[in-house]
Image (cartoon, rainbow, N blue to C red; front, side, top):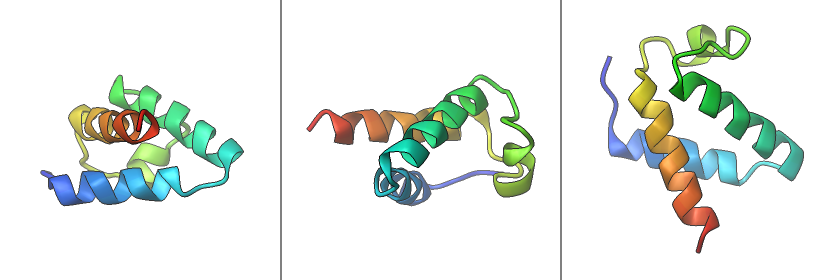
Length: 68
């Protein structure tokens, strides 16, 4: 399954709008999924078919936004 840059930006914006504790936990889960891990089944349930690169792209946008 492919994905668009719009999906990446929307997911990053959603994560960035979360309360701090939830945001950091979600970012940690995205790091796990970017490495091919499942993060407690979250990947299969909420992101079926998304490649590792999707999670890497989301993390890249988050890092860019947090650096502003």
